[in-house]
Length: 321
Image 1 (cartoon, rainbow, N blue to C red):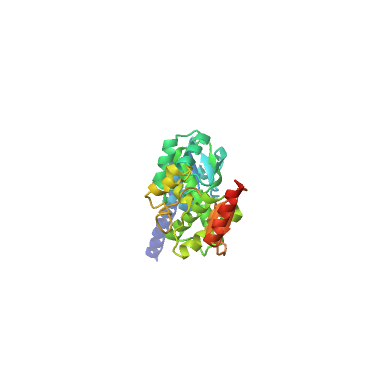
Image 2 (image 1 turned 90 degrees about the vertical axis):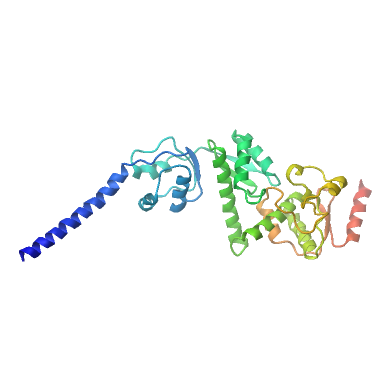
Protein backbone atom coordinates (compact mmCIF):
# COMPACT_ATOMS: atom_id res chain seq x y z
CA UNK A 1 0.00 0.00 0.00
CA UNK A 2 2.80 2.40 0.97
CA UNK A 3 4.58 1.53 -2.27
CA UNK A 4 1.42 2.37 -4.27
CA UNK A 5 1.03 5.71 -2.47
CA UNK A 6 4.70 6.48 -3.14
CA UNK A 7 4.27 5.75 -6.86
CA UNK A 8 1.17 7.98 -7.05
CA UNK A 9 3.05 10.73 -5.23
CA UNK A 10 5.96 10.53 -7.69
CA UNK A 11 3.53 10.68 -10.64
CA UNK A 12 1.79 13.70 -9.09
CA UNK A 13 5.15 15.43 -8.54
CA UNK A 14 6.09 14.73 -12.16
CA UNK A 15 2.87 16.32 -13.51
CA UNK A 16 3.27 19.32 -11.18
CA UNK A 17 6.78 19.86 -12.56
CA UNK A 18 5.47 19.59 -16.12
CA UNK A 19 2.72 22.07 -15.29
CA UNK A 20 5.23 24.53 -13.78
CA UNK A 21 7.49 24.21 -16.83
CA UNK A 22 4.53 24.83 -19.15
CA UNK A 23 3.70 27.95 -17.14
CA UNK A 24 7.29 29.18 -17.13
CA UNK A 25 7.82 28.76 -20.91
CA UNK A 26 5.40 31.55 -21.94
CA UNK A 27 6.62 33.70 -19.03
CA UNK A 28 10.20 33.29 -20.22
CA UNK A 29 9.14 33.78 -23.86
CA UNK A 30 7.47 37.03 -22.89
CA UNK A 31 10.88 38.46 -21.96
CA UNK A 32 12.29 37.81 -25.46
CA UNK A 33 11.43 41.06 -27.27
CA UNK A 34 10.29 41.21 -30.90
CA UNK A 35 13.31 42.43 -32.85
CA UNK A 36 12.70 45.59 -34.87
CA UNK A 37 12.10 45.41 -38.61
CA UNK A 38 11.08 48.01 -41.19
CA UNK A 39 9.57 51.02 -39.42
CA UNK A 40 6.61 51.65 -41.80
CA UNK A 41 4.62 48.82 -43.39
CA UNK A 42 1.14 47.86 -44.60
CA UNK A 43 -0.89 44.95 -43.20
CA UNK A 44 -3.38 43.89 -45.92
CA UNK A 45 -5.70 41.87 -43.66
CA UNK A 46 -6.52 41.31 -39.99
CA UNK A 47 -6.25 37.56 -40.51
CA UNK A 48 -3.66 36.24 -38.02
CA UNK A 49 -1.73 34.33 -40.71
CA UNK A 50 -1.50 37.43 -42.91
CA UNK A 51 -0.43 39.60 -39.95
CA UNK A 52 2.35 37.18 -38.94
CA UNK A 53 3.51 36.74 -42.56
CA UNK A 54 3.56 40.51 -43.12
CA UNK A 55 5.56 41.13 -39.95
CA UNK A 56 8.07 38.45 -40.95
CA UNK A 57 8.39 39.88 -44.47
CA UNK A 58 9.15 43.26 -42.94
CA UNK A 59 11.88 41.91 -40.68
CA UNK A 60 10.09 41.40 -37.33
CA UNK A 61 11.12 38.30 -35.36
CA UNK A 62 7.71 36.70 -34.93
CA UNK A 63 7.07 32.96 -35.31
CA UNK A 64 4.48 30.19 -35.24
CA UNK A 65 4.57 30.38 -31.45
CA UNK A 66 3.46 34.01 -31.66
CA UNK A 67 0.64 32.98 -33.98
CA UNK A 68 -0.63 30.57 -31.32
CA UNK A 69 -0.27 33.07 -28.48
CA UNK A 70 -1.51 36.18 -30.30
CA UNK A 71 -4.69 34.61 -31.65
CA UNK A 72 -6.13 35.00 -28.15
CA UNK A 73 -5.51 38.77 -28.37
CA UNK A 74 -7.21 41.45 -30.45
CA UNK A 75 -5.54 41.32 -33.87
CA UNK A 76 -4.43 44.59 -35.54
CA UNK A 77 -6.74 45.77 -38.32
CA UNK A 78 -5.54 46.06 -41.90
CA UNK A 79 -3.79 49.34 -42.63
CA UNK A 80 -0.52 51.24 -42.32
CA UNK A 81 1.66 51.13 -39.19
CA UNK A 82 4.82 52.95 -38.11
CA UNK A 83 7.05 51.67 -35.29
CA UNK A 84 10.20 53.34 -34.00
CA UNK A 85 10.75 50.74 -31.28
CA UNK A 86 9.22 47.54 -29.93
CA UNK A 87 8.06 46.92 -26.31
CA UNK A 88 10.37 45.06 -23.93
CA UNK A 89 7.72 42.42 -23.24
CA UNK A 90 6.65 40.31 -26.21
CA UNK A 91 2.99 39.90 -25.22
CA UNK A 92 2.51 43.68 -25.40
CA UNK A 93 3.66 43.82 -29.02
CA UNK A 94 0.26 43.52 -30.74
CA UNK A 95 -1.45 46.05 -28.46
CA UNK A 96 1.56 48.34 -28.96
CA UNK A 97 1.27 47.85 -32.73
CA UNK A 98 -2.43 48.74 -32.72
CA UNK A 99 -1.62 52.07 -31.05
CA UNK A 100 0.91 53.06 -33.72
CA UNK A 101 -1.09 53.62 -36.90
CA UNK A 102 0.94 55.50 -39.50
CA UNK A 103 0.11 58.99 -40.74
CA UNK A 104 -1.33 58.61 -44.22
CA UNK A 105 -2.31 60.59 -47.30
CA UNK A 106 -4.60 59.93 -50.25
CA UNK A 107 -3.15 59.55 -53.74
CA UNK A 108 -4.99 59.22 -57.03
CA UNK A 109 -3.94 56.89 -59.84
CA UNK A 110 -5.40 57.72 -63.23
CA UNK A 111 -6.82 55.27 -65.76
CA UNK A 112 -4.73 54.92 -68.90
CA UNK A 113 -1.37 55.62 -67.25
CA UNK A 114 1.61 53.40 -67.97
CA UNK A 115 3.76 52.06 -65.11
CA UNK A 116 6.33 54.73 -66.00
CA UNK A 117 3.74 57.50 -65.65
CA UNK A 118 2.09 55.98 -62.59
CA UNK A 119 5.37 55.67 -60.67
CA UNK A 120 6.47 59.16 -61.72
CA UNK A 121 3.26 60.64 -60.31
CA UNK A 122 3.65 58.64 -57.10
CA UNK A 123 7.27 59.71 -56.73
CA UNK A 124 6.20 63.34 -57.00
CA UNK A 125 3.27 63.01 -54.57
CA UNK A 126 5.12 60.94 -51.97
CA UNK A 127 8.59 62.52 -52.41
CA UNK A 128 10.14 59.17 -53.32
CA UNK A 129 12.69 58.01 -55.88
CA UNK A 130 11.02 57.41 -59.23
CA UNK A 131 13.63 54.92 -60.43
CA UNK A 132 13.27 52.80 -57.28
CA UNK A 133 9.47 52.86 -57.53
CA UNK A 134 9.60 51.73 -61.16
CA UNK A 135 12.09 48.95 -60.32
CA UNK A 136 9.77 47.74 -57.55
CA UNK A 137 6.81 47.78 -59.95
CA UNK A 138 8.73 45.78 -62.54
CA UNK A 139 9.93 43.27 -59.92
CA UNK A 140 6.34 42.52 -58.85
CA UNK A 141 4.40 42.89 -62.11
CA UNK A 142 2.56 39.98 -63.74
CA UNK A 143 1.40 41.74 -66.91
CA UNK A 144 3.99 44.53 -67.49
CA UNK A 145 1.14 47.05 -67.24
CA UNK A 146 -2.31 47.15 -65.66
CA UNK A 147 -1.48 45.33 -62.41
CA UNK A 148 -2.66 48.31 -60.31
CA UNK A 149 -6.19 49.63 -60.82
CA UNK A 150 -6.96 53.31 -61.12
CA UNK A 151 -8.62 55.08 -58.19
CA UNK A 152 -7.78 56.63 -54.84
CA UNK A 153 -5.48 54.87 -52.40
CA UNK A 154 -4.35 55.54 -48.83
CA UNK A 155 -0.56 55.48 -48.47
CA UNK A 156 1.64 56.05 -45.39
CA UNK A 157 3.59 59.30 -45.61
CA UNK A 158 6.82 57.61 -44.49
CA UNK A 159 6.53 54.43 -46.56
CA UNK A 160 9.50 53.52 -48.74
CA UNK A 161 9.34 52.56 -52.41
CA UNK A 162 8.99 48.81 -51.85
CA UNK A 163 6.25 49.20 -49.23
CA UNK A 164 4.26 51.58 -51.47
CA UNK A 165 4.29 49.32 -54.54
CA UNK A 166 3.68 46.15 -52.51
CA UNK A 167 0.69 47.77 -50.79
CA UNK A 168 -0.76 49.04 -54.10
CA UNK A 169 -0.49 45.53 -55.58
CA UNK A 170 -2.21 44.09 -52.48
CA UNK A 171 -4.99 46.72 -52.54
CA UNK A 172 -5.55 46.08 -56.26
CA UNK A 173 -5.68 42.34 -55.56
CA UNK A 174 -8.40 43.07 -53.02
CA UNK A 175 -10.35 45.08 -55.61
CA UNK A 176 -9.96 42.20 -58.05
CA UNK A 177 -11.24 39.70 -55.47
CA UNK A 178 -14.31 41.90 -54.85
CA UNK A 179 -14.84 42.16 -58.62
CA UNK A 180 -14.58 38.38 -59.02
CA UNK A 181 -17.03 37.67 -56.20
CA UNK A 182 -19.54 40.23 -57.48
CA UNK A 183 -19.40 39.78 -61.26
CA UNK A 184 -17.80 36.37 -61.90
CA UNK A 185 -18.13 32.87 -60.52
CA UNK A 186 -15.00 33.47 -58.44
CA UNK A 187 -11.66 34.95 -59.45
CA UNK A 188 -10.83 34.54 -63.18
CA UNK A 189 -7.88 32.25 -63.84
CA UNK A 190 -4.57 33.96 -64.82
CA UNK A 191 -5.11 33.62 -68.58
CA UNK A 192 -8.73 34.86 -68.42
CA UNK A 193 -7.66 37.76 -66.23
CA UNK A 194 -4.86 38.75 -68.60
CA UNK A 195 -7.28 38.75 -71.56
CA UNK A 196 -9.80 40.82 -69.57
CA UNK A 197 -7.10 43.33 -68.59
CA UNK A 198 -5.87 43.65 -72.17
CA UNK A 199 -9.38 44.27 -73.51
CA UNK A 200 -10.15 46.66 -70.62
CA UNK A 201 -6.97 48.61 -71.40
CA UNK A 202 -8.00 48.95 -75.06
CA UNK A 203 -11.44 50.19 -73.98
CA UNK A 204 -9.77 52.61 -71.57
CA UNK A 205 -7.58 54.00 -74.38
CA UNK A 206 -10.61 54.54 -76.63
CA UNK A 207 -13.02 56.19 -74.17
CA UNK A 208 -13.52 57.40 -70.61
CA UNK A 209 -17.30 57.52 -71.04
CA UNK A 210 -18.78 54.74 -68.87
CA UNK A 211 -21.76 54.18 -71.17
CA UNK A 212 -19.57 54.01 -74.30
CA UNK A 213 -17.17 51.55 -72.68
CA UNK A 214 -19.75 48.77 -73.07
CA UNK A 215 -20.30 49.72 -76.74
CA UNK A 216 -16.55 49.77 -77.51
CA UNK A 217 -16.35 46.39 -75.76
CA UNK A 218 -19.08 45.09 -78.05
CA UNK A 219 -17.12 46.21 -81.14
CA UNK A 220 -14.01 44.41 -79.87
CA UNK A 221 -15.98 41.24 -79.13
CA UNK A 222 -17.87 41.33 -82.45
CA UNK A 223 -14.68 41.79 -84.49
CA UNK A 224 -12.87 39.01 -82.59
CA UNK A 225 -15.87 36.67 -83.05
CA UNK A 226 -15.80 37.30 -86.81
CA UNK A 227 -12.04 36.86 -87.10
CA UNK A 228 -11.60 40.52 -88.06
CA UNK A 229 -8.52 42.52 -87.08
CA UNK A 230 -9.31 45.05 -84.37
CA UNK A 231 -7.62 47.90 -86.31
CA UNK A 232 -7.77 50.25 -83.33
CA UNK A 233 -5.43 53.20 -82.82
CA UNK A 234 -5.61 52.70 -79.06
CA UNK A 235 -3.65 49.43 -79.26
CA UNK A 236 -0.68 51.36 -80.66
CA UNK A 237 -0.69 53.66 -77.62
CA UNK A 238 1.60 51.39 -75.59
CA UNK A 239 4.80 52.01 -73.63
CA UNK A 240 6.67 55.11 -74.84
CA UNK A 241 3.93 55.67 -77.45
CA UNK A 242 1.20 55.88 -74.79
CA UNK A 243 0.09 59.41 -75.62
CA UNK A 244 1.41 59.86 -79.15
CA UNK A 245 -0.90 60.35 -82.13
CA UNK A 246 -1.16 57.31 -84.38
CA UNK A 247 -0.30 58.24 -87.98
CA UNK A 248 -0.50 56.26 -91.22
CA UNK A 249 3.31 56.20 -91.25
CA UNK A 250 3.38 54.76 -87.72
CA UNK A 251 0.85 52.06 -88.64
CA UNK A 252 3.02 51.01 -91.58
CA UNK A 253 6.28 51.00 -89.62
CA UNK A 254 5.23 49.45 -86.29
CA UNK A 255 5.99 45.73 -86.49
CA UNK A 256 5.02 44.85 -82.89
CA UNK A 257 2.04 42.65 -82.01
CA UNK A 258 0.42 45.77 -80.53
CA UNK A 259 -0.30 46.81 -84.11
CA UNK A 260 -3.81 45.45 -84.60
CA UNK A 261 -3.89 46.85 -88.14
CA UNK A 262 -1.29 44.21 -89.08
CA UNK A 263 -2.03 41.36 -86.67
CA UNK A 264 -5.22 39.60 -85.65
CA UNK A 265 -6.34 39.04 -82.07
CA UNK A 266 -5.47 41.22 -79.11
CA UNK A 267 -2.12 42.78 -78.08
CA UNK A 268 0.29 40.67 -75.97
CA UNK A 269 -0.15 42.67 -72.75
CA UNK A 270 -2.31 45.42 -71.20
CA UNK A 271 -1.60 48.94 -72.45
CA UNK A 272 -1.81 50.68 -69.07
CA UNK A 273 -3.77 51.19 -65.88
CA UNK A 274 -7.49 50.40 -66.09
CA UNK A 275 -10.56 51.26 -64.05
CA UNK A 276 -12.88 48.68 -62.56
CA UNK A 277 -15.58 50.08 -64.88
CA UNK A 278 -13.47 49.24 -67.94
CA UNK A 279 -12.91 45.75 -66.54
CA UNK A 280 -16.68 45.34 -66.10
CA UNK A 281 -17.21 46.47 -69.70
CA UNK A 282 -14.60 43.97 -70.93
CA UNK A 283 -16.41 41.18 -69.07
CA UNK A 284 -19.92 42.21 -70.15
CA UNK A 285 -19.94 43.83 -73.62
CA UNK A 286 -23.28 45.25 -74.70
CA UNK A 287 -25.16 43.07 -77.20
CA UNK A 288 -24.90 44.98 -80.51
CA UNK A 289 -24.07 44.44 -84.18
CA UNK A 290 -21.50 47.25 -84.12
CA UNK A 291 -18.21 46.67 -85.92
CA UNK A 292 -16.94 50.25 -86.27
CA UNK A 293 -16.77 53.48 -84.28
CA UNK A 294 -15.22 56.91 -84.66
CA UNK A 295 -14.84 60.01 -82.53
CA UNK A 296 -17.30 62.80 -83.33
CA UNK A 297 -17.11 66.55 -82.75
CA UNK A 298 -19.00 66.28 -79.47
CA UNK A 299 -16.19 64.21 -77.96
CA UNK A 300 -18.25 61.03 -78.10
CA UNK A 301 -18.32 58.20 -80.63
CA UNK A 302 -20.53 57.28 -83.57
CA UNK A 303 -21.00 53.52 -83.88
CA UNK A 304 -21.82 51.60 -87.06
CA UNK A 305 -22.74 48.02 -87.94
CA UNK A 306 -21.54 48.15 -91.55
CA UNK A 307 -18.57 49.67 -93.34
CA UNK A 308 -20.96 51.65 -95.55
CA UNK A 309 -22.55 53.23 -92.48
CA UNK A 310 -19.09 53.91 -91.03
CA UNK A 311 -18.04 55.73 -94.23
CA UNK A 312 -21.19 57.90 -93.99
CA UNK A 313 -20.17 58.86 -90.43
CA UNK A 314 -16.68 59.77 -91.66
CA UNK A 315 -18.07 61.91 -94.51
CA UNK A 316 -20.49 63.63 -92.13
CA UNK A 317 -17.58 64.42 -89.80
CA UNK A 318 -15.52 65.88 -92.70
CA UNK A 319 -18.44 68.02 -93.92
CA UNK A 320 -18.73 69.64 -90.49
CA UNK A 321 -14.98 70.36 -90.38
